[in-house]
Image 1 (spheres, rainbow, N blue to C red):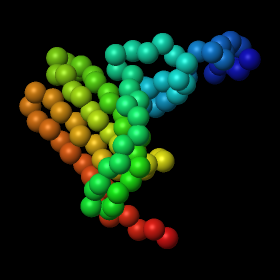
Image 2 (image 1 turned 135 degrees about the vertical axis):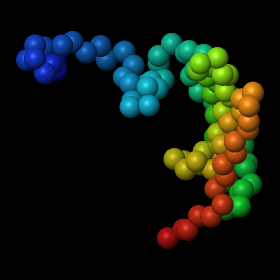
Image 3 (image 1 turned 120 degrees about the vertical axis):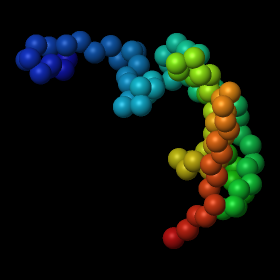
Length: 101
């Protein structure tokens, strides 16, 4: 058991999801929520930096009455492309250059 700052012991449930600084669950065995990212499989994505075999993720959120849908494509841990859409605008980010060293 881990100790709290006040010196008392606290129990830790290994099956319980831990939270990252972003607030997202760090484990995949947690019950899915409407805000949980959906794995949409693998796709080839062509951007300015080249073509990548990416994992496609989709996430929806509703904050302050503004519903936002975000699609992101990642290659390993690299964000290759992201498209975020709400009622007011669409924002797109793409990897334009990659220095391979």
